[in-house]
Length: 512
Image: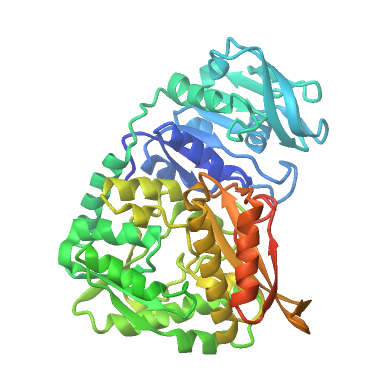
């Protein structure tokens, strides 16, 4: 998209918190976009930046393959803020000195120069979050220090005339107590950008863009029934009317009775869904495969094969729309550019050229909670917006090891019980995502008078606002007891239930 009138461009040096930077900027109602450090000046200017933020990163500026911008961001005529690695790169590029000393990890108390516009309105002492090995030990000529901790004497510097600010700590992380205020000072005091980015504006801009991109011809919409694809379908319908044709490919890895529920729900909205049962083909191609990345690739390729075949029944089909989200885009890029690969997303960049469709991804600039806001703006029913996320590859990523029809059926029944008991306890809306995982582990048990050797089910429930970080949900013991009793009693093949109490990070939300 062309972006709002002004935005903040974030150059990603591979930092684990890059998405959080983008999210915090958007929380302040300013549009942000993440670009690789080698983005050319024309790509950066395309987003009409009011400022540029340089992210952290895992490497040292002295490493041979250390990432560096292809264009000097300080020469683009807008304020620049360097964070962690971004600070170190700015220091080195401007003639300062960086050394492998002063390592600091975790909370620290920083002393700030409160006359700096970056720290306006803050007390001189602040709790901040440090995560660095190298440190800037000498600022570039003409720069002054504006922050220090007991371990890192130069934890920030600035040159107001050159519109450059840099800090060693991470304001985007909640552990930096007033980090949001620091970022807002950069946005509003230094960049002087207006907090004007809203879902209403996004909706109107996106509808206009969709109409411009697809002036004629039919659009096929990949539908799963989840929030992302549902919002995509409704937004496309608003823009293009009956030229939009949602197709639901049932890969046999959906939740129990989900295909029928999705078709019925969209029928109530006046939208006919073309549903195809391709479960046999998917399961045949997954037979014997245990590697999670290979499973994702197989599902992605098979999805496209089926979609291509179904598209032939749609007259004048020229476009394919899908609900790709911004975290998917960022996570699917190589570590040699932006943030490290966490997993392959089958709906990002995997479309074969033979498909012959132009791709429409109307929500690819949005995070998950922003998609929900857009759905509310579009008037979607609450049952659409409140649904827990479900992965594109379906239950395949919740069955570590080989995916078989028997294991899928077992997990579908167990997962349905988990969600039923959570709803019965009134906890569904308090949990951001809950599901079951069928482990490739056999457990000894006793059922009746006999010894059993059957599968183990793990239950996962998390709370999060942005799905980039998440905390495990403190499930009441009586709910866990109800889930375990029903699963073991009603689902043949499972004799043990365990609960996952790991946050993200260090774990991911899904198991694969």
